[in-house]
Length: 206
Image: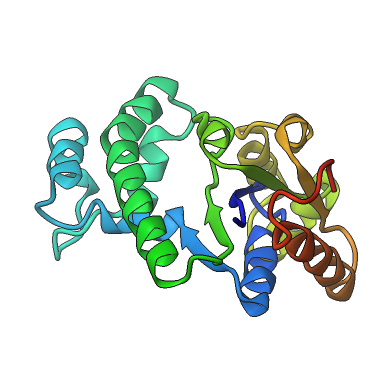
């Protein structure tokens, strides 16, 4: 059977690019950023808990959560971030499991990629069969963020607020190095995809 894969990286490491390459090759992707938005839809349990804890200041006019405003509230505040994760992660995990089961039922040989930004931080790497980490140098990540309009100071603070990629790759079975050209990254993804599709008939890190 093909393994269930946890994929992670860091801000501006190019994780979305790698995920899209996996999709093109036929992998099924469960995007935790999408699930994070789904579980906080108005009037759901997590939504109620967030509004109660953070106040109605986090709401847009249509009652949806203003994610940018909420992010500012928890940025740099470990206690608030942990509280937010307590409210959302159990529901995300439930939905993730439901989707994975649905995919397996429809396609038993499916390669399932779980795109989890905080895969290592929340210990979810222990609940997947293989881990893929997308790596890029800090300088390249800074450049990419600056091209998106972030100041260098803001970009650096966002990178430094996350677990360093050098730590994440310690948990990786495969590392996709995304400092080069698109075609070089794609070639790495193709290699990893082919190895993963062999199921348990391989060993070692990429």
